[in-house]
Structure formats: C-alpha cells, structure tokens
Amino acid sequence: MARSEPIPQRLRPSALPQTEALNEIERKILDFMVQYLRANTYQPSIREIGRRFGIKSTKTVSEHLHALAEKGYLERDSARSRGVRILGVDLSTNTVAVPCFSEVPTDPAEAARADATQTISIDRSLGGDEGSFFVRARGSSLALLGVEDGDLILVSPVTAEAAQDGAVVLARTGSDSLFHRVRKNGQGVTLESLGPKGEEVAVEDVRRVRLLGRVAGFYRRVDDGPLPGPTRH
Image (cartoon, rainbow, N blue to C red):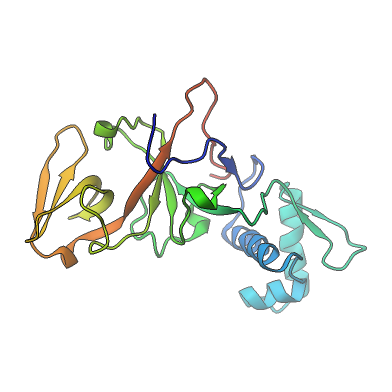
C-alpha cells in the first residue's frame, strides 16, 4: 500500500487509553499543558493555567488538575512547584499532535480539539501541517484509492488555487463533504468523485470551490491489530 505521502507506521494516541472521558475544560487544559511544555520545556503554573482560561480561583484550577490525575492523564507532586508529569504523551519536538475525528468536521479551521475523538502523534516530516486532521473513512468514499471503511485519512489544509491538478481533496459540494480528484483545465475545475458512482462536478470559478483539505495519506493496519481507538467518547 504505497503512497507518495504515507502516514507513519507508528501512530500512537497522545494519551493512554482511558475508560473515563474528559470534559471540555479538562481537554483544553491538558492540550494547553502539552503545548506549553513543548514550547518551554517546563510546565505552566496553576496561575498561568488560570489566566489562560479566565479562571480566577487557583483552587478551581487545582481541582481540574486533580480530575486529570484521577482519570490517569497526570501525576502530581504537591511537594514541588509545577510538580506535574503528563502521562502517555510523546513530547518530542520531532512529532506533532493531530486531532482525529470520527466524522468530517463542518469547518476544520473552527473545529476544536475538544471535539476530536482522540489526538494522534506523527512525525513532522510525514505530515501534520498546522490545521491538519485525521478522519476515519466511512463506507466507500475513497474506494477508487483502495481505502477501506475505518482507515485513518490524513487531511492537510489547502486552497483551491494551490491544489495541484490530480490532487485528492476533501471538498464540500452542497451539503455533502466528499473526496474528489481535482482536474484543472484552464477554464475552471472539475471535481471527480472517488466514490463508487464516480460523479463529476464542474466548477467554473475555482474560488467558489470550498476545499476542506487535501489527502496527504492514509493508515491501515495490515495485521490483526486494531487501529488507535478513541481516547474519549
């Protein structure tokens, strides 16, 4: 299953599998702590977390951190300043955390990481541009490329003008979000569906094409092992 831009063979959830879901503020705090640690090599203080999310009470922030620890995402050392260790997160500067959605988000640019079913770390050299996301393949939307139901598809941001002729893109046509191959003819754009019916949509003004991103690659387990599963529900 060769692809010009393959997804790495080692995908891993950014957090250890959990049986108890995070609520929205817990997910946001955890994501903030991960990004802060990557940028500064040390954890944010309780007051810094509070300022980031407009929480005036340090006790309230501490309660959120306690909840994260109870759910297995953190270890806390009350005897040390900034005494928090994030569990199960790859903090290498060579990797990037990419949100994974079970359904195509209506607007990827506005989709919050809290809406993702999980976050997956991949090597920066293999994708993960700012704004990239994974989505699980559903049905036969990419059947012509051999993508099967449940495969993980990596989608990277692209504009209609920048999309190359022949690129596979995720485009919104009407109320549908479908995978197409872009064909440029100098007078407009034709979107060739990669589903089983192979419909074509002709667009005269390329600026009216709403692309959600280009397909950079996809990942499938070829053994009997499971794909990374959601870390929350």
